[in-house]
Image 1 (cartoon, rainbow, N blue to C red):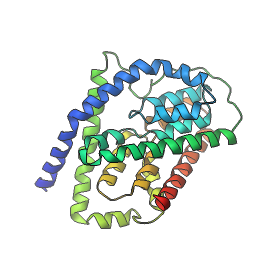
Image 2 (image 1 turned 60 degrees about the vertical axis):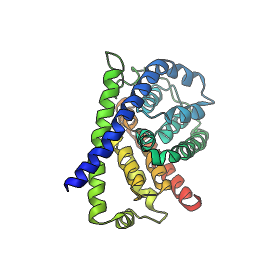
Image 3 (image 1 turned 180 degrees about the horizontal axis):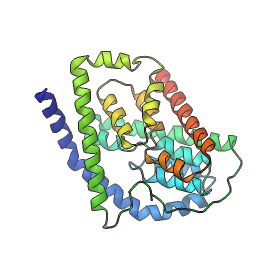
Image 4 (image 1 turned 180 degrees about the vertical axis):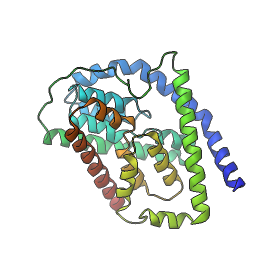
Length: 277
């Protein structure tokens, strides 16, 4: 048991400096560019899903929260909103980058999610062509804690420590499970080697917290779920964006419809990848 705890601590400590530096860069970029993103997205409705998909793949909760605020204010389409959600991977990209042996997985993951987000975004906008009426905008990122007084150091450190704690907890839990039942058995419990695994992964991704991306990434790194399944799970992993959507958009039926579409697109995408990847 002590060996497993020490292994988890050492593995996570190796990632901590990288996570802090990465979050520092992300916070800086988000502060600098974030103030302009609402204007860009409002003025680019035709290219909305494409822009949303590209912005969403940046590791952070900021753009999914931004998109939720803009959608609640009637400034972007449902396709653009879902494109951002589908391409968002929260902390998964950073965790993969921090593991030198799995950096090769980052580009295929980003490409897969952007393609899914763009295709689904434009298709959804075609189906739901009716424009929403404008509403009063609230301050962007007001509900995820990304904007704090005192610069970018404090929020970057907070994010890094938070992810470190999640990583330690789930790494230790996964190590214990692997030691107790084995990787093959865990994969089988999660419907491994079947087309149905993305169904479970997409459900995990709906957890409105960065814990979902950590769980999914750790399961993928441990060999318990496939690449197709981690894509499906991360497609539903919109992080704090869903919480902000339910808080800012008063139409609960519409919010549930958005979650349902998000889940269906993620599952179908995962199943297709499972068949052909």
